[in-house]
Image (cartoon, helix red, strand yellow):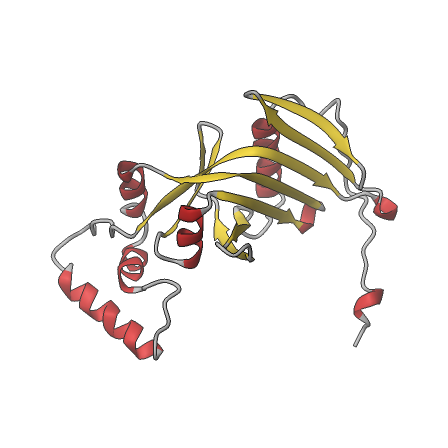
Length: 213
């Protein structure tokens, strides 16, 4: 087995310059996301969502970006999950995208608030029926004795809503929208001299600067 200390890649696919990054980080993110789609990056909308507990312990998990509206990044979850509860008490969070095929990373720091009920229900009812049932059946992040219990809950939900084409949204499920306060774009470069261009919002305006790698 190759030693972990010997594992390394030298990045050389692209560059990132402050004079070509533009003035709007949302526009740059959308440009990079489109390029990730064209490069056929698997699930380019997958991101690591990091939250912080009441006692200051960070935790991260993968969620899927489902939209960018009014310059806010939107994802959906169970509000009673660990991440849901932590965001309710402390909305500060970070989103991290990594597209290895393009040797790129984007880090977003901001605050998450719930989306409105109508938007959450509209998205919920656009999901496959099996996913809607799963959202009703799973007490996300709660301890369960066995998988069989979960499967029994699915059967009960299927029976309960068998006459409905679209299920109502569970009260405990919905969207979060993250308002970014800082967005950093990372482009891998040779010899670990990577390009890092950061945007920080100050008094409603974006300021852009380069960071040392």
